[in-house]
Image (cartoon, rainbow, N blue to C red; front, top):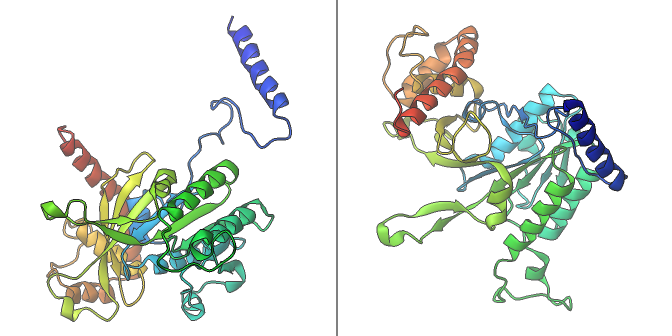
Length: 354
């Protein structure tokens, strides 16, 4: 009986494959085809982000990172590209430079190989989407495309009317951005899913719908389609060093990374972690030491270091004193400790005993 059922189900697969022969369609039983429904992560090289997401962003899917100006979005994108270029000699990426702010010298300072970084500067939103789809279908082998930022470019209908006449800034073009992106994401998920990773850098607006309650929320713009299609939506918000902000070095501040949306197991919406933007970058050593301190790994005597005050000066002092072998030891402890703490938190939120 079981043999007959297996033969019947295999016949169904064969019939469907024959009917759609030559078309790009995947079908099979998940017990036999491990590629179906497989979710893979890739390391970003940013310690805080990798710990927060339990291994990195989702490969071959849409990942959104949003936040206000100056919170480190563009730097984070360049860091991700540099890290993956270092891991993989054949790693090729592209930045759709909608803001026209990509700095060649800054990219070089991140040790990015420019021969493996494509820069695209489209005139319209439709062009950026079409170019992205063309790249995904080409033989160029592009692994990652970053949009910087998704709101910083106009749809064609915002620029000219149906007769090709330039529009005025006073012309009404409501919801154009959202409609174009909705079509783009449907095309991307139909044709490119699993092959090329998208990282969307997104600007924010202040949602005043709850202003009467004294609440002003920061939300990404661009329509609902963006949030529907992404696997990870991560909010970056810049924080000052509360106790001694004046003593911080230039271009140094805290960044709260928060999971607004998460479609994978082992991590939960609402989880957050503090990252350290130190002297112009998400410095690896500073982030490991800072996060280890935040997770109480140091103060639990897992790493024996004398007590110190919670100031930037003392953290910088640790940064200068802790040897590299201790830093590596701390890094290995971060993920398990963070996972343990958020698991306890989830249990408490659900009324369970931790």
